[in-house]
Amino acid sequence: MVDTRQLKDPEFLAGLFELADQYKAAVAQHRAARPHEGRIVASFFYQPSTRTKLSFDAAAKRLGAEVIGTENAREFSSAYKGETLAHSLRATEEFADVFVLRHDRSFAALEAARTIAKPVINAGDGTNQHPTQALLDHYTISRHFGRTDDLRVAFVGDAERGRTVRSLAYLLAHGSGNRITFVSPAGTVPEDMRRYLREKDGVTMDETVDLEAVLPDVDVLYVTRLQWEYADAADQARLKESYHRFQVRREHADRMQRESIILHPLPINTEKSDGFPEIAPGVDGHPRARYFKQSNNGLYVRMALLDVLLTGPEHPLYGRIGPLPEAGT
Ligand code: NCD
Image 1 (cartoon, helix red, strand yellow):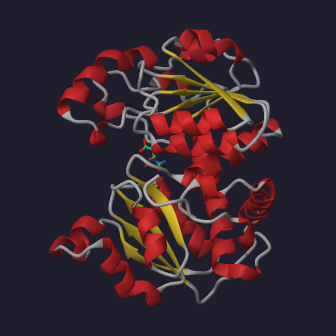
Image 2: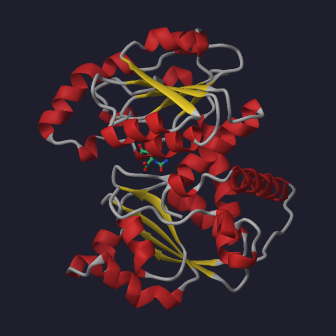
C-alpha cells in the first residue's frame, strides 16, 4: 500500500476504521489482542521520524509481531556502502512478512513494492505521498464529524512539498461533496495534484492566499509546515518571506465554527521557523486543536492496516486495496 489512489473503495475505509475502533477499545481496556504472534514487520527508515516510526513499532508489537529494522538506514544500513534500495530489499525479503519504508525519494515505495513480493507500506516517500498519515487523518475526521463527505477542508501551508497534503486530498476526492481550498503562496499547488482533483467528481478545489477568509466556514483546517529539507536556499528564502502570512494563531482558532477542527500531521516547525511556527504555541490547548489526538489515532489505524496485510488475502479487506499506480506518475 504505497499511494492513496489505491484506496478508492469506501468499503475498505469503513472496514479499516471499524477495525481501528476495535483496536482502540482493546488498547484502552488493556485487552490483549495479539493475533500475529510469531510474525515479523521490517521497518526501513531512510529519513527521520518520531511518531510514524514509533506508532508502526507499537502497532506491530501490540498485534504480537516482532519488529526488525533500521531507524537511520542512510548511515546504519548498507546504503552507506552504496547499496541500492532494491538490493537491500531483495537481500532481506524473506526476513519479514511486511515491510514499512520511509524514504527521501519520491516513488521509492512504489519501486520497493514492485521489487519484492511481500507487502510494502509507504511510510512517506519524498514529496510524493504518506498514505497511512492520510488514513489516520481521514479516521480522525470520520470519527469527529460522523462522515467524510460534504466537508470543507482548507490545507494551509506547504502544498507544494507536503506529501501528507497530496495523500489526504486524494482520499477526500474519492468521497462526495467535499470542498478543498489550498491556502498557500500563489502558484504552489503542484500540477499533478491539481489535475487529479479537477478530474474527480467528488471534490471541488480552489486556491487563495487569504487565511482569514476561509476561517468562518471551514470544517477542517489542515496545517502543514514549510518542508525546508526539500527546498533549495533560494526557495527557502522566497518562501520564508510569505509563510508568516499563513501562521495559525489563537485569534484564528477563535473565529472558526464550534464543530470545526484544526489538524496537523506534526511535527510543528517550532525551532526552525524564525519565530513563526505554522501553528503558534497558544493554539495547542484550544478546543478546536485536535492534532495530538490525531497523532495518537495513528496507532489504531496502523494496527488495523498491519492486521489486514499480515493476515493476507484471506482478510476480507485485503482484496479491496487497489492495484499499484503506474510508475512515477
Ligand atoms: C509528516 C511527514 O513525514 O511527511 N510527518 C509525519 O509523518 N507525521 C509531516 C512533516 O514532516 O511535515
